[in-house]
Image (cartoon, rainbow, N blue to C red):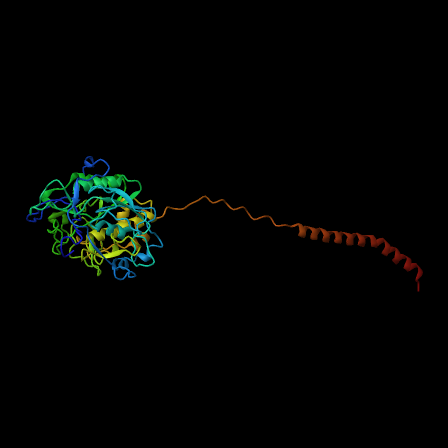
Length: 462
């Protein structure tokens, strides 16, 4: 997003990872390795001693409540809801918290790593916007609704750009260091969400960008692997924004002169947790015309893209059903942070309709039904823009059947009942009796006829 840093910090989204990027240099980097032994233990969320460093973010209400937001129209969600609304699914939102809102009646407090709350406080306004895109209930007075309006949200507050730790640390300008939350607390939050009963999807609209020489957190990698592989949860993460402080150094796009080059050979910046390609569905952003957004961070780990501009969602400052916003601190809402929840909501739709699919199969279905770019895959949009309707209806070649075969033993039908011959038999018998009587009568008349003939001959001589 353009404008002051306080206008929705969509790229870093509260993860305070202090790294000096220095000169970006392309280095061949293999896909990340996972050490399952580094997964953090599941413990109750707890935060450091913190305080507000600035007033909470302000929002502005939407002018035309009846208008269907452009991303919602582009994804044609109206055609999907007769088939699936995400009922029975719980999506964990690891973010800046989610405020209680009348359009999120099933909101579940998941804990707080920032302060002493329960996860349902959102001073930054970021997490509430994300949660609304995923699961806001439909309402007759507004055009906006979440992708999976019958799914539930588990809110875990893991980060904030408005809180600060009260341990006396100073930043380079002598001010208290901005923000609370880092990759370690993110790893702990992922483990906590993965072990929470009923969670089937985790949305992480938070990104930490580090140079390839800076390495990555083994604990974070183990946490996403635990969620995806051990707990069979679809983990969705934002690809990152180039206009954030940490993600200014971009990875190069595909070079037409070397179309078959390995994209991992030209990586300059790692965007985590998105770069855990086997465990995470990484989501880039597109504009209303379907073109990659100028701010989306490319990378070989990008799987799909979704609308990330002209965003409308729930207003954390107005909990009534018509409480919607498209502006925070005077700036429009945009970024890969808001593209990711469109993919997370789509995952909830698929899991509700096809509960037999594994997390990996759900991710494959989203990728295979996306609108692919000309080259089939692109570091900015991955396999293309998601298509929720196709994702819940397509019969994919070679895919696990989306419906279990329905078969049952059928009894062999009995043969036809024998015909009722009684009327015929009675008729035949009756006819036979008549014939027999006629025959007896005829036989009995022979002697009489002969006698009459004889007597008549004796009396009538001429």
